[in-house]
Image 1 (cartoon, rainbow, N blue to C red):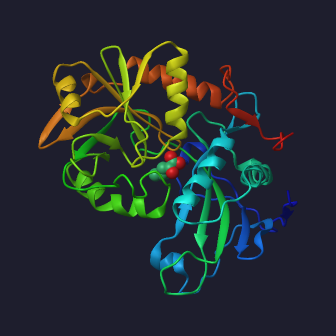
Image 2 (cartoon, helix red, strand yellow):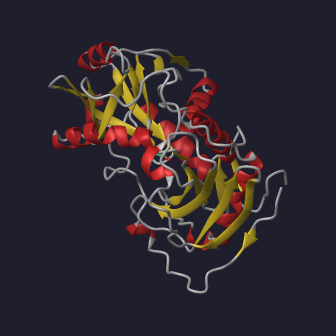
Length: 359
Ligand code: COI
């Protein structure tokens, strides 16, 4: 693997106090960059001072949205050690997303090392208060200057990082979500399984309407029948009806969440009955009306987020009395314990910052 060149800033900034952190507003002193050119491959991996970059107005990402990203996290544990969570899985997903958009793959070891090395350079920015972390945003954009529609011949891979607090203003308090039967996020055969900018653009109008109606997020239903749960856009969705934990299957229209996978492994390890199966909104509302429902979202940014209310076709369904369910709380405590190093890590999800890939 090519060595990463490091140029340190001469004007370091002051990280904000942990208590003031929101999501995605503050960035550190450095960023990682690496270019791709046809015939040359990915080249010039480097860490440089964080700064804006210039783009030609005809740059194809600005017109046709050939862009992908991912989101990972680094945690400062109670023992002061910095842990990176499931980096290998995030690196694999970067390449899966890239494949959907005809973007050339990056050596997964380089993706992992780009993140590890950047977090190492900016390690004083990793906050320590529970609920905070250093959020990592690897991104690839198409950089060729042209207005014809075809895959770009050049790309920029960059990574930015920033200290964050909770994604939702509710924190660990239950959020309210609105199941939309009018807007669609993605359809099978489309880009729903890729972490690409367009999926988030597609979610904005529905999310604005949900916000006006007092909801935090949209629960996207399948794009054909508007009947089966897909995901929330900012997180995957899970629920418990009786003794069955259910989450929609990876059907090509939803993102394969890393936290989703972590939760499924934990639940199966606890011997619970877990189904990855299509679940209709009618089954969910019936369970909610019968008071037999616990519901939560899973995501890197959202962690484990309880759902306290579901809106659908003008009805409001209060879930679990609007309170965080016992299983939701147990999942949150377990995942957060692993991430901050206060609980055992039986699946080997975390890696200490000092350990290089293969080291
Ligand atoms: C993440 O959870 O990392 C995401 O990318 C979701 C995004 C809406 C913040």
